[in-house]
Image 1 (cartoon, one colour):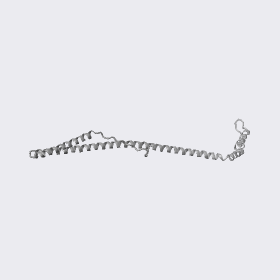
Image 2: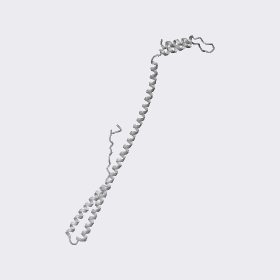
Image 3: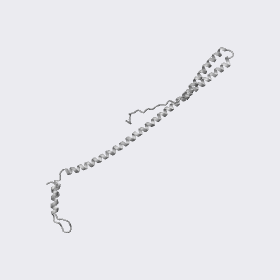
Image 4: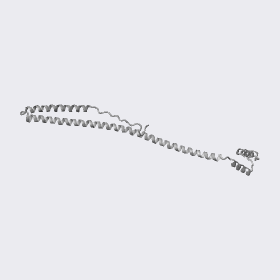
Length: 190
């Protein structure tokens, strides 16, 4: 017999059983009911235990899926935080590189100006010494030497003027602008 047929027979047995007055209860043979329950249990298809296994397996798979989902979310958050941190580090590196360029250009300009000023001082001092030597020793004695000193002084004046023009040009020149380029496609935003 099938499970459904056995259940129908059990229902008929309950409906046909004598009723106890005023209680709503019935009288059935206990052995008959136990035999019927045993027959139903034996008639249950193999699918019922397998269905329980499927249900248990479904719950395990769902728990594994939830655990994997949470792991993926945590990993995605870590990766997003790392990417944001890399972007911040890159932006800071660009700022620092720009500042280094600016300081290097400023230092270079200052060194150039100091060099020109030093040259100006040396040449001016040398010129003054030449004039002093000319006035002290040779002015009255050697007119030819005077002409040579005047030529040297003229050359020195010309050189001094050139140094001063270079100094002014350097002092008034704008610092160069540098474009800092970030390599694309390396280790990040692709």
